[in-house]
Length: 335
Image (tube, rainbow, N blue to C red; front, side):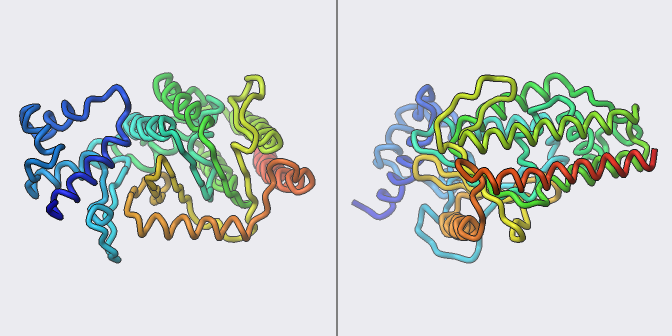
């Protein structure tokens, strides 16, 4: 068997293993390349070699790392960028892209997410419509200059379609085995953003600032409950889940960015945040292994506060509640 054929078979096996059961790979490939079913079958069987243009099209469409395919070990890593405000990507399309990705992860037989959270994990913004409304406003204000939010005031009414997409995103995330690594600064970013919007006079109602503080306290109580149970569940629902499906670590100093590593049926994907919430995404195996090793090392230098670690868990969440209380106190003094 020729080396090219072997690589081609590896490529197609990798793609087929990640496709949803209801998707016909032959149909998908024929549509993508503009060829007949027979031509698609001949390429899948290795009877017809792919052209370079076809290989490029397939790798981009299915997010396959060329480095992984040819087993290259290179310092050059190819990323896909998911950037709000670029190429017409708005908040709704960004959320839809994340929802498609999270559904694929959930569909995998073996799956895990490791999330080093410099800021509150984006999924949690949709636990409450108030937090969702605030973040959607802030993202549009900060990231999309032409979004129509330049002179818009801030109210805590989340756009219905965006909130529903976010709720679906959250629902999928909660079902996947997850490790999160937090620091005492994880909540600081949203608190600074709330204070900035208050000082800038963006709030329609001043009382909404205190409403957000109430909601953040309620959300922290919910995350603390999840950590105690060892699994995640939707707020307001009966606590049900698989024990040890959720592990929460507290790191005192080393969580300096938002990094997500996803493992799904042997495929690793790294999501690296830049410019608030934009994502650089890669499946490059060398890079993903480096990220995983770094995250595992970070876990070793952290304290697990889920499960039986009640004392450390209470101490950690009390610190976060105090940060919310401090913001409330500053706003009251300024009011």
